[in-house]
Structures are given as structure tokens and as C-alpha cells.
Image 1: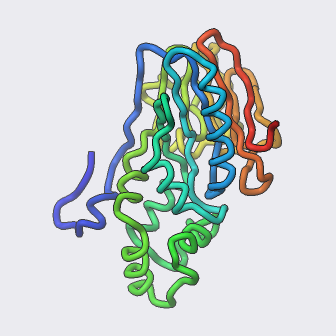
Image 2: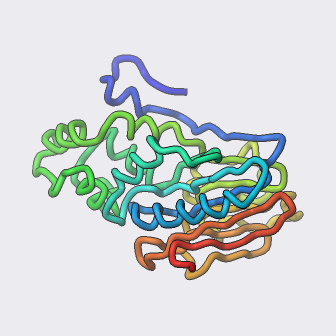
Amino acid sequence: MKSILRLSPFLQIIWFHMRQKLFFSERPEVIYAVGDVHGCLDLLHILQDKIQADAAQETGAKWIVMLGDYVDRGPKSSAVLEELITTKPNGMLRFCLAGNHEESMLDFIRNPHRDHRWLEFGGIETLQSYGIPWLPDDNRQLRAAVQQAIPPHHIAFAASLPSLIAVPGLCFVHAGLLNDVPIEQQEDKNLLWIRPSQQGAPSVPNPFLTVHGHTPVRNVAMVENRVNVDTGAFMTRRLSAVKIKSDGEITVMTSDSR
């Protein structure tokens, strides 16, 4: 659901109401779910190489699911987006989910101004990665700089990212789910922003395992019906993933593992 009449072409690309949710009736033999990259292109390259090498030893269908937050905080947000847009893993499908940082970046692009909250949690670093070293004093100049620096295909990519991917027994989101709400009725504001403490205790166990990022933890955390894969790459210099096989076996992989 995109576009509103009488908007400039730049804004038409990013104007949307709700993100797509993807449901699959079958799951692949192996899924690699990668936590929050946050502009750490070097760590992404290391982890991608390890995933490719590991996947070469596996048979059957193999997916990579990126759990969102590709931009902000780290130094190479623009290059991370370009990598995800233009490169394809060998012999695998890659799905990229939306994170709250992509959502905030798009909100800023719609109406760039110097006191936007995005600039307080990583937006400055992202703008620097696009060649905007400082914020112009005038918001009109800021808007012009943003429109000139950020490629339309980056904006279109961020706007098109789904908020949820579900296969039998597994659900992948950026932040988490509101428990006791049917998966089809989950709202994007929760899928992209909720914290584990806000999810509530389910009245009955969920019939699936939720795999998410968003809330940094020291090590990949498996708690009850969810797995948190965000190990704070921009702070710890450790990007993590989980390998989930169709038989339920889960293995942790990191950019610094040997």
C-alpha cells in the first residue's frame, strides 16, 4: 500500500501505511538468522563468509533471514544497504526484515529536520556514511542534502522490507511479538519496537519459536519461546547468527568465532 497523489517522486517512494508479512507453508532445511548489523560492514562480510562455508556442507533449501537494523551507530550504513540490495548469496535465498532504525530513517527522510529523534540514536553516523559530514543549519538545506545523498533505491529497499516472516514452527521479527495476539494480527509498531519486558506472559505457550534482535544481549539468548540474536555488533564488535535446522537443532555462529 504505497503512494499518495501530489507528492514528489522522492516522497512517493517512501510513503507507506503497513508492512508486508510473509507466511510460508513449508520451511527450508536450514535457516541462518542474522542479528542487528548497524553499519558494521566488515563484520557482516566475515559472518556471511562463515555462513556460506557452513551452508556448502548442507543439503536442501537454505535461507538467510536478516533481522533488521542495518543502519545507524556503525560507520558504514550506506554500504551495508548497498550490499544487501546488490549481492546475492550463492545457493541460498536471503530475506531482509525491517528494523526500527530503518523505520526511523524513513521517517526522517520524509521530513528532515535538525531536531528529529533519529539523529539522537545513530542517524548522524548514517548521514556521514552518505557523505553528509555535518547538518546544515537550515532545514531546507538539510532536505536538499538528504535528497541528493541518499539513493532512491536505498529508500525503496527500506520501505519494502517486511515486518514478519513465518514458517511452520518459527517466526522471525525484528523486535518481538505481543503475546496472546494472533500472529496475523500483530502490529508493525510491536514487531519493530517492542522489548521483551513488554511482551507479556502468554496464557498458553506459543506454537512457534520467535527469533528476533533489537534488544542487545552479551551472548545469543534462548529464553522460553524466543531467541535473541542481537549481540550489539557496533559496541562489542561481534555480529551473531543462529543456524536453525529442520530437525530443531540450533547452533550459534559469530563473526569472531573460529
